[in-house]
Each structure stands twice: as C-alpha cells, then as structure tokens.
Picture 1 (cartoon, helix red, strand yellow):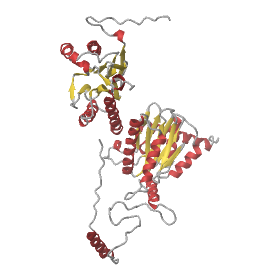
Picture 2: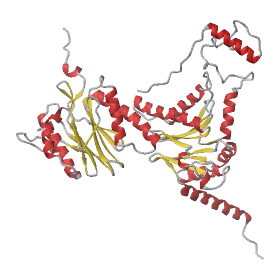
Picture 3: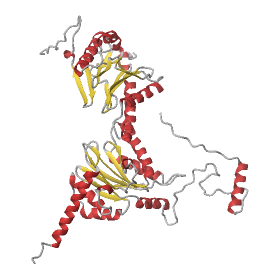
Picture 4: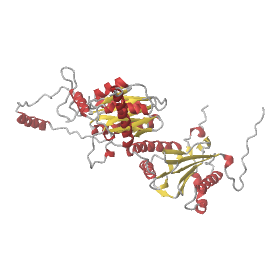
Length: 227
Length: 295
C-alpha cells in the first residue's frame, strides 16, 4: 500500500494573512494576524509576521513564508553594512528601496507581498507598500495579504489623516479583527508594532481581547475535564 | 546580486610573441632567441600579464615584500589596544590635521560590526579595502549561520586575507597591522587580537603597533594590570602618551563595552583624562623631591 501523500504536511508554508501599516501623527503602527498555513492545516497559530529590518524600520510579511523570510534576511544583510558604513540609522526609504530591488529583480521566483514601515528623523513616520510585482509606493496606510480584500471598503470610510497613537492603534486592531472574522486564511492573535521617535513598542492582543462583530460568538475558555 | 569584475586576459598570436621578444631584446640589449624560454618555470609563455608572483623567497628564506610592508607599518601612526575585564580601549596617534581638513573624515578606529572594532597602523587606503571586505564578511556570517562573528573568527578571516596577498600573482601585501577588539557575542568575554602583513595573528592582553610601538609595548609590559572601566582607558592613554605629543588634539580614543558597543571619546573627554594623568605625574615628581627643607 502506498503511503497517502498528505497535502497538509507537504504543501509549502503560506501566510494567508492580513497585514497593515498606518502612519499617525508622530510615527507608524504595523499590525498583523498570526496564522501560517500549509494547505488547510494551521502550521503556526501564533506566528510573528512583523520582522525587524533595523532598529527603526520593520517589515510586514505576507504570501510565501519562505520567500518573505529570505527577502527580509537579505535586506537585513545589506542594511547592516549600510548602517555601519554610514555611521547612523538607515532611512525608511532606503530600507524600502532595498526590499523593492529584491522583489522586482527576482519577481519570477518570489511570491510575497510586503509592507515596510518605520520612523526616521527626516520624514518622521513613513509607510511603503511593496506588492507582488515589486512596485514601490509610499502611502499614508497600506494593507496586504488575503484578508486585506475585506478591508478596502472599511478603511475608505474609517481612515483619517493625522490620527493620534491611540486612534491609529484602535483602527489597526479593529481592521485586523474584521479581516480575521471573514478570511479563513487569517486568524490567531493580533500583533502590533509601534515605531516613533522614542523607539519601538510591541503589543499583543490575544483572541479574547479582540472586538467582536455582527454574529460572532464570544470565545470561551476550554473547560478542563478531570479524567 | 553582486557581480565581480572579470579581468580580460588576451592570448597573443605566436608571431606577435616573437615580435615582442625581439622588441624587448632591442630595448634591453640582450640577445633574442626565436623560441625564448619563459622567465620562471611556473609561468606559461606570456599568457596573462598578471600572474607573476611578486612576493617570492630570498635565498636566505626571507619574504622581502612582507618585511618591507612591516616597514610601512613601522612608519605609520602609533596605535594601542588594551583589554580590561569589562572594557576594551583602542587609541591612535592623530597627526595634526591641516586647517582646512575636516577631521571627522579621517578615521583610524573603525567599526566592523556592532560588537567588533578595528584600529590599524600603516597605509590608510589598504586598511579601507581590508575593512570593507571584513564588514561584508561580518554580515555574510550573520546571514548564513544566523550568529554574529566571534572576534577570533573575523581576525582569522582578516589574517587569512593578508596571507593570501603574500602568495598570489600580481598583488602586493597589505601595508597594515591591525588591532581587532570586541566581545564574544554570547559569553561576553572581551578579546584583543593583532594581525600583520604576513598574515599571522595572535591574542593579546595589551599591544601596540605603528611608530615607536616597541617603547609603547615596553611600557605596557611594565605597567599592565587587570583593570576595568576608566582605569583601562587611563592605561591606554598613558601608554600612548609615551610616544605621542601630549594633548587631546593628538590622541583619538575609542572605548568599547559589551552593552554600548564602540564609543569615540570627544576631544574634551580626552583632554580631561590627559590632564588627570599629567597631574598625577606632577604629584609623583613633587613627592620624589621630598618636603621643602626648612630655611
């Protein structure tokens, strides 16, 4: 009898994902869900899709997990050298351009959508979207991943310029939660990273801390059975 | 993504080779043979102009090019390195800068990675090339093995590179000796290494290179003790002051700690330390002379 080829375990890791980054008055906020899948199996339900490029610039990864990891590794490799040679922090623009170079020049091999966001003293907070083909576009806010489809209409209405940190953070958490509710490939917890002049702050919102929407059932702790 | 320039090598037509050999014989006055033997046994007949070895053994076993490179180092500005228990100090002699020159761009203490730094004595341009290669290697190491380099690893790499240039065609050795300092990324143990143009390296508690390095090393041998923090800085400055004109303008000091990495002291700080050392020296002199005698 031949062993059954299991699509679950053999499929490459993909991050269905919802990722986003928003510019606010003083910095940027990056947000992401935490579901990594191989086929329909959730390989990691608490993954960290927001990766550090430098002290002041972070990257949101979506699409192929392997491709996005390799791109971020290479960008860190170049940016470290750049920082040591320059003697000061790299700008968000430089980091984004490096990511774009890798994405565009290797477009036939890669399948990853990325969002670069950070803070530098020249531009303040900036967000750059780098979707599949390797376009580089600076935006006031950017979304990506399969879950982003469900956010276009919502953000058209809910986003406004010059938000405070609290407003921006609430918007990010609400957006990711909405996407998780509708997109099967997004789920788990919500992670946010806030970057401003003072530095970087990571936050973690467990499933039960997320806002609930129409028809959603509140998560209950699993009862412990005495056996 | 990076491409290396490939040197074009032209292969000469045999008739051209004969013509060149004849032309050479005309200019040198030596007789010309139709089928000349190649100059050295290892070299094929004039295939490429760039594979002739420059660093070769003398009859009594010396590599003169390497020894001449060490001469170049001996003429370079003094550099000193001192290893403490939690602090490592690098100091270099700063030649007085021209009035119009921007002193900040003349750097003799360089960062290789967040936890490793280098000071050198000798040809500045050679150092720049070597440091660039080392910086790339530091990041390449991080990328492939997901770990920062150890001080020993990067020293071995730099020394290996220096050795390669003593055994390759068409190149000369690097005219620098380096002092490489840093902390082990996991154990936090401080380290100081020295490399030279021959490609040898070894670890030291304290060392000096460049101009008058023997005097500085002698001083260190006499006065070295296990120190930490400001004491280590003072020892390095005292050692450098043995051969350098006194004053913050002529000395550049960099201090490395595990948590803060490399920090270049600014001129005022150096002046303060120098002033402190001078005051101590004066006090010792006064004490030697004894209390003033009664009239």
